Image (cartoon, rainbow, N blue to C red; front, side):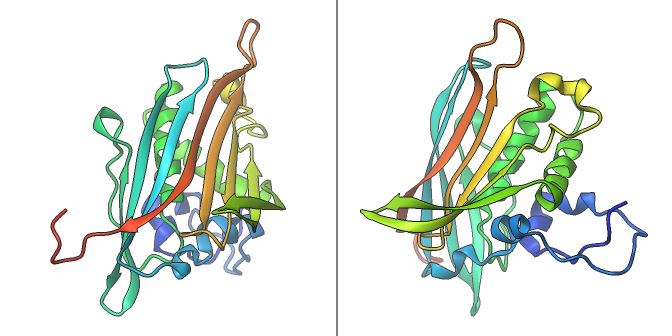
Length: 237
């Protein structure tokens, strides 16, 4: 049984990862893990001056399915005197993921947009009706299993300090036999306070696990490209 945990900010609620909390649990709150703070709680957007837009490249490769290259854009604006109201455009065409805007955001919602797409894909690949099971596994792994290490990233000719959060949320699942092929799927988050929006890269990888599988079955990576001017209320898109 998990202890009742403090309510995460609107960023996490937008993805409904809080479904892992349950109800009627112990009243004493547990602190966030270091991984949760880095990924879901830290004020990634504090280094931006809205209105602005964050741009990311998204590349899918691997032998499981055809790959593609696409883009992600996160428009960041002020909401009254507060920052920030955020609206994402995550991929395009048939691949586009429609997600609600996030008001009063402090952490970067691009993390949740990435995870929401991944969770939907996991549900599709494993023939589950919803992605709630995978949401809960990711949340629990952030609490109990994630590995964090200090690293550096190269950004605009500089080496900047960063933290890398890595987790394999399905590997320790007692029910992994239901989706054994995906049990060792790895998620890596690279957070760097010195880059715009604080999120440098997110990656999911899955090596081949069955006889005859290629070395890499899934490799999806979203990387920060830079910023550009975002439309204001008086500027048409």
